[in-house]
Image 1 (cartoon, rainbow, N blue to C red):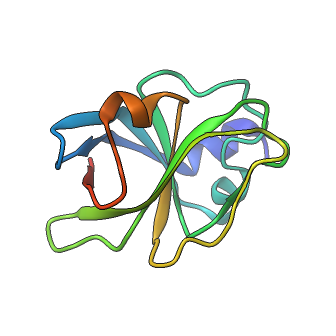
Image 2 (image 1 turned 90 degrees about the horizontal axis):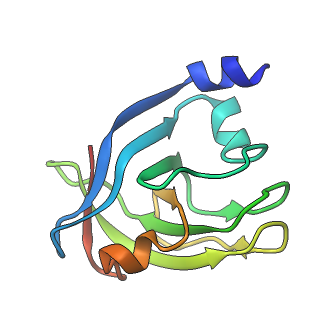
Length: 131
């Protein structure tokens, strides 16, 4: 599958907001919906633009074949209003050697540019809403 085909299987939605702190994690969130787009994640990309994020379902990530570090926030199951509790945060996960193991209770991970977690003040226990 080409990069263009992979991009077409991923949807885009409004951003991610930390409801607890009243801050923005990302202005635009790309949703990896297909098996292929979830597998590819951010691999092969040169960077993740400021204000953007990638949402992946599941409870673990790896950094193999990545070219840049990321912040990662693992979120729990969505409540009736779509709000999700922050289960775990990982700042500046390094490319190639950074591995984030299974995060108990996580239903997905939001991959963000480095600094997004600190800028938004996001910590474990906060409530995040994906747009």
